Image (cartoon, one colour):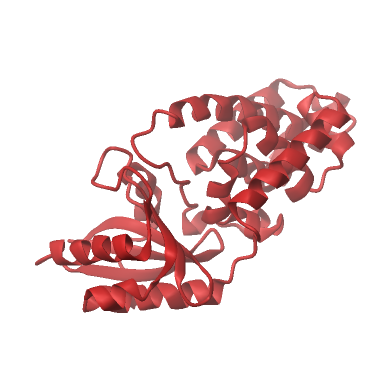
Length: 299
């Protein structure tokens, strides 16, 4: 490996972590890194005083351009849009190092509340620990403008959720309770899973059946999952517990095919938010590494 390639590879995990948090889709993050690599390959790297700063700047600006286009596309997306999880084999320790709670699917979805410019400034300053001056230089804006973007981003995120911490043990317990309730479905058991103001968000991308709008309330969510359990009929669901993006998730298999990925937010006792990723294209990367359920299977 030549020195230029080796240097790029050295910084690749950090660049991928930034691009993925910007876009919420591994394939888009890989495309950003490919474009950054092409520009790096054309650059006289020996003339650079700070190669890492150059790479982070180029990666951020390419990702920012892509995110602006993606925001326009997502405005016309059929139903809610959910981020795509990293395949388990892609969850390299280096990606997790930059504050692991900010790689969770729930946090990536929370970032969708931000404008592309706010998202970039927030990630650079709050997640990757660049100063306001350094982040401003990367974004090509004034330091005061960068500071204002970070301030607005933090305010928007506080509106969406008071805290960013993830109680993985509580999430896992709630997912296990969900599996048990779906095995012997009845309205009372299912309703007991959800907080009164719980929300259900499902992403089918217009390709498979999914709720086209968020659903609110324990009663409505319980009725939805009671109907789903009954509709499974002679193709009962098989569940597999997994860790995706550093947090517990449930893989749901129906008829030998991966039907959905489910993750939750909870208050310790009840589910406050239920997320179901059903888009076949987004599940494809997981299919490649999850051929069949192993010892972690739940029935």
